[in-house]
Image (cartoon, rainbow, N blue to C red; front, top):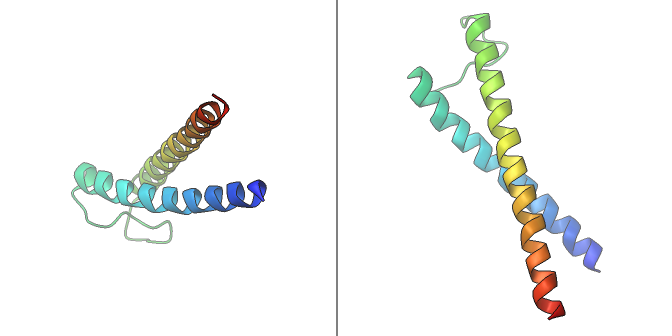
Length: 86
């Protein structure tokens, strides 16, 4: 039963992390570029530099948010386990 709960929590945190990363990226892109929308790879009106920069920034933010969520989950679970054992 614990495996099912852990898997469901992990899935929920992954989805939440994706939403948070998307929102953070939109804000960062707006501040950096002054444009409300980040370029899409298929947008021929945007330069290669702009498209690749947006992709790199998006990937970095997503990886950072994922690491924060995973690390927080592991540390939180460890604290709960150690409190329960005491």
